Length: 427
Image 1 (cartoon, rainbow, N blue to C red):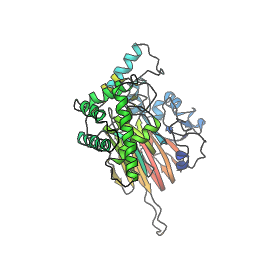
Image 2 (image 1 turned 30 degrees about the horizontal axis):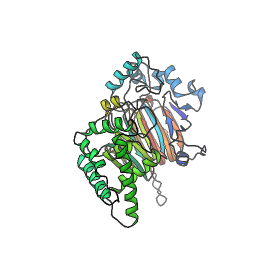
Image 3 (image 1 turned 90 degrees about the vertical axis):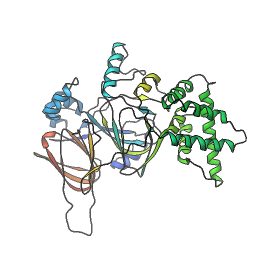
Image 4 (image 1 turned 45 degrees about the vertical axis):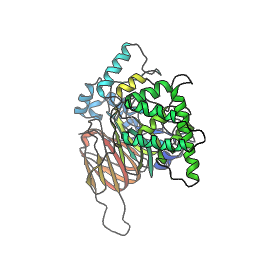
């Protein structure tokens, strides 16, 4: 069964005012449009275009009423073991006009334990100081749709962190009032390890205004601004992108220690079509850009700076993976010409990207693309149009349209030109 779905973008303050509308051919609302949710998450379940088709107004209602039909018998039984039948993934179009908070997500084991403990403590599920709003993990991937998608993700190799500190020391020497002792604080803490450094930055930086971290943050921002001044005069600046990020974060979150934590992280500029996979424990922040985000359906977020919201330092340190290494790019498996599958190795989700360009100079028809489903799926067309056919029915989708597909459709055939994304369960 093919069921047309739609939704209204979430108006988080960091959202772009036009990127989602531009992508999908919609009229902008006039306010920020941060995320378009396509799934059954209770926070914003996708609206069913023809409620009479399935007897429900949205995906969450339909799945609750007819899980074996919507999810398939196997997935309905499997998800029922977690408490109730549920769609295990959430597909989003995400448009960041401003930086998001630094954050990380728990493993399944951490989420279950934390959720139970907070329930036992009587903390309301929607309380501002709640860490675990459900017992599920939340790995996620982001596929860049804009020409560049800017992000921070994962701790960078320590040699690079020391290179940044060395650049800051050179900039410090080029000022009228060098303050090397501020940078000594960072280097001395770093010698104790990344965990202790993040602990110090967050704990001292969120204390009173006289702390050491306050001085360090002020000095790093001043040096980043001095780097911009020197670059304007023709000077070559090492780690110029990282220092530009500090300046941008300082403008959004003045005094926040997260801008120093940002220097410890990989600074990534995804090109269109590149993908990051962010597993449990990976600290990250999206800075700007438009992308397709696919994640496990969960609300569990442990924040680590660049936010006025609740930060539980002890729980964050428990969840974070402090392994330093390169940015976690996810390479596709190429299934056919123009068809790529992004499979991160979790059962909750995988993403298939189909791009078929029309050849005006050729009379040869564009080849059809076939994808075998392993569970329920959601497709959204971001350009052109396709006829999608399954075992028992078919549906046309054009730019801006989305459809939920039940797993009994088996193998899907896509015929058309443009671009479409298919989210489904992992193998």
